[in-house]
Image (cartoon, rainbow, N blue to C red; front, side, top):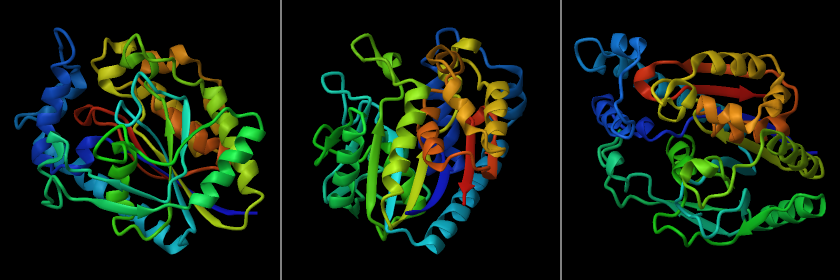
Amino acid sequence: MAEILGLGCSHGPIILNPAENWANSRERVFARVPNYEPPPQLVAELGDDNGLTQDRKDQQRVVDSFKVLHDRLHEFNPDVLMIIGDDQAENFKQENLPPFCIYTGSQVEGYPFQRPGARVNLWNAAPDTKYSFSCPKEFSQAMRNHLIRDGFDLASSSALKGWEWGLAHAHINPLVFLDPEGKFPLLPFFVNCYGEEAGPDYPPRPTPQRCYQLGQGIRKFLDTRSEKIAVVASSSWSHSFLAHRFQCRQIDVETDRRNLEWVRSGQGVKLSELTPEELQESGDHEILNWIITLGIIGDKPANIVDVLESQTQLAYRVTAIWE
């Protein structure tokens, strides 16, 4: 039976930026929303310096919480580092967009700083900075085969050719903090979290129930193995610019606090009962990555490392560990 460590984090692009650049991200996002009007909490957080004071506090907390995850991950020293994240029209586009896809190649690269918003970053790294990772090819093939035979119609990919920059930002952004040297064999797992939000030609996202079931299926496979596996849920929770409940103007803090208590208390299965409509209303699409992880972990309380609720940082961010 595999030994499992669970980690939960965000992958939002601003986590790579110094606080002085967070306002630029807000401006780009707010420009997408017609007739955008900031909610009162955001106005208060912006203060008289366009949010810089709040941003500096939040950026330091992002760095500090990733340091906690990094240290625990390296102490655990896994044989496989599995990151569950969504590909946002990076490698998987409308002509080929599976609900779930496991990477079965032997090597993968990522360029986290090539996006215009990441050209100014915490490491002063050049846009063409490349991170390389070895992947557990035989392990991922065995997982794929087990899941298909267990009734999950899982896609697989042995190479990422849909996007010249390799790994999706949901995978590479956390890795810059967690394992920049590529010490651990990396298993990327892709989920179509945005679904129809990306446009009329995109299929619906998988349901929370199916994501939890898939996590349980992965756990069945892991219970046949002897490796040490670290599983990372990579996503923010509600996004202000996707929360239709609030006309795409603010984070759904109320819903996220409820979900947080379920995760904290070991009742993650309750997240599997959410409906697609509820995810759409709260802008919580990406929490599907966490729901798969919760299916793997089971009803185990999470150690919540940090929670960021600031409207200035565009999404609700939770950092967690399951031992």
